[in-house]
Amino acid sequence: MSEDKKRPAKGLVVVNTGDGKGKTTAALGIALRAVGWGMHVLVLQFIKGAWKPGEIKAADRLAPELEIVPLGEGFVDPDAESPDDTDVRMARAGLERYRAAADSAKYDVIVLDEINYAVKYGFVTVEDVLKIIREKPERLHLVLTGRDAAPEIIDAADTVTEMREIKHPFQKGSKAAKGIDF
Image (cartoon, rainbow, N blue to C red; front, side, top):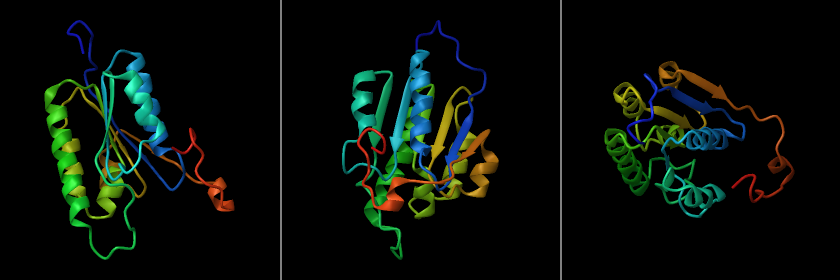
């Protein structure tokens, strides 16, 4: 960000959680709005990474103001008895990537997409995320997404939105729709 642009005095912590669709989509809306104001945004996608969804293609067109970095191998087995070592290693590397980005002062907004899943599956701890929130640079806006946000993370946030599923085509066996679901 150029020196002549004013940064907010205090960045917000936003959590998008719940069992409904739209958590990442809402975070990407924040990213798009921020880019519209000339801000720089980094989206770190925990877990995601096995394919190239539409948002990554869009980020390529909005670079360098918007960067999206997948940090996983794709979907994880929710029934696994213990976390996969590769998933843990990749999530921990994602936390380090976040710290470097936050410390760089290059970004105005950082989205930790699906970080709540990374906590739920034991790839990172609630304390890891709370430390990120406590130690984030004051000017930085931080957006955390994913189902099942821990109560401690919800308490630490400034804004929390819970998406609730009422109806979805998946319930009738429909596949994900290009441009809508990915």
